[in-house]
Length: 547
Image (spheres, helix red, strand yellow):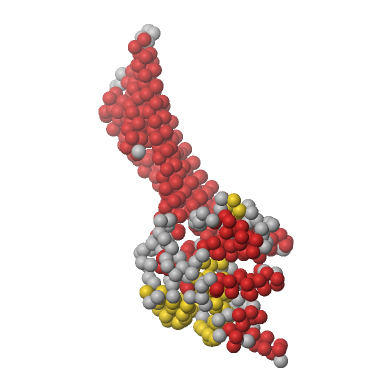
């Protein structure tokens, strides 16, 4: 596509050179131009417009396709990167890359046809000027090269300002996320709202504005420098050149006309450098993100033709360790070494204080976090990067920070809608939510009801291992009772393995095992019937309260 665009731009430049020569001939000629000259002018004009249209039309398709491919490639990389690494990159940085950076690159690609046509016009004009006088063309070339070097130095500083402005956009998107996710807290607290607006939003937007204006000022100075060069060049041609070399008036007129005609294309070509500068800054950020997202092997297979793995009989964590650094802590928090085993049809509760590592252990167990040490084995087979994505297909999970899709993505059973309606009735949601062709009528519900919809999706997935992270914390007492006494036993009766992260000590006796985690270590693993309320978070206080 770029080759065809280059040919079209070259044709446009040739047509422009012909138009310059024809205009100069008519201006210096005598009498009325003949019909042949008129038709030649029309042909060159049509060729100029037609080649320009073809170049822009071809590259517009190419640019949009490349943009779509770039977004798909970035999303594919994001899907293939370990969760822990994505959390370190951060959502704001990902969002600004998928929106602002890709848009800047698209604008630059759409500017390529115009820039190519301008460069071809300059090339054609240079050929015509060289035909008039090679010596004068060489002098002009040296003059333009010196001016271009100075122009480059001016815009180089502008590029640095653009990079600084682009870095501020990451902070700006973090503020956008805080605004949308913390709007309730901001509305309830006037002082917090004022500080957020003045210290966070105002500071970041002002920094973006300051860097962007500084970059534009440098580009404007560079643009005016190019205009100054042109007027200086015309003045030298008109007043100095005749004193140095005797020129035919026709040649002198040709130089002036050609120079004036080339002012627009040269200004356009130089002006496009600011667009390419923004795209360069965005591309550098995307490349940095690409390096941050680069992994030795894909973490997720996005293909849809693979079948789900068979159920397991035995799943074991053997001396598994994992560490990460918490905010305001010098030493990293360590999980493990942990050794656990799960069998088909087991109902296991995982308890512990806040920050004890329960959710992290759940992510390790489900294959979302890669253990730094130890092994995960399924039926004796070691899980590594080659089969980790297959391993994850054993699990259905509703995490504490779950996301609810508005349709049953990836579920294609012919009885999907009928099963979903049955589950909606069981979950007491049939009066609020309906389903048609796999799409939910609404997800605008209370948090507890949204968790029930997430549970519905987990039911339809029909995986071997179910994980619920504080699922009942947002449920009313009635449905909490239903969850522990009916829904979980029903899953167990169907041969599912269930791990429930919970603080609801009233239901510990229903579990086959209760595992307590404290500061990343397993401190107890006992049958549920033998566990008392002292095992939960704040258990010592509860025990004293009983006394």
